[in-house]
Image 1 (cartoon, one colour):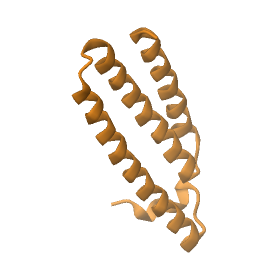
Image 2: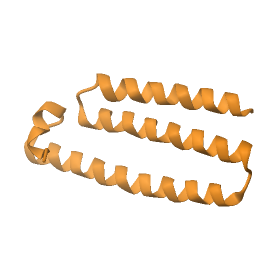
Image 3: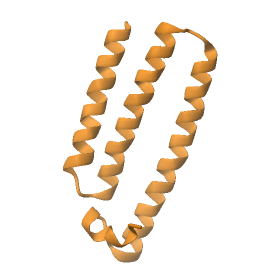
Image 4: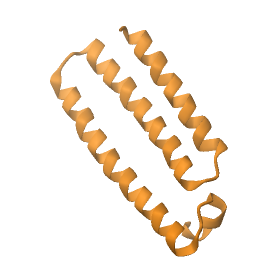
Length: 100
């Protein structure tokens, strides 16, 4: 696999995530689209580090970023689940009181 193929796959994943985040109104689906977009950015960064400077320190940094992203998304899903249980609000329009 080459850098071009890696970046092409990352661009495809990012575009699918962008479409999912923009076109959906269900909170969980929007979060899944954002998750795909973040994973595409991580894949592109990993491809650059692997093909341009194959130093293990870059890969360790990516693992730390993935761990932080996993915790962030778990907390986001917990908030979405709590919002659904308390108010039966699963659409983004129903959750407008959370802003600011």
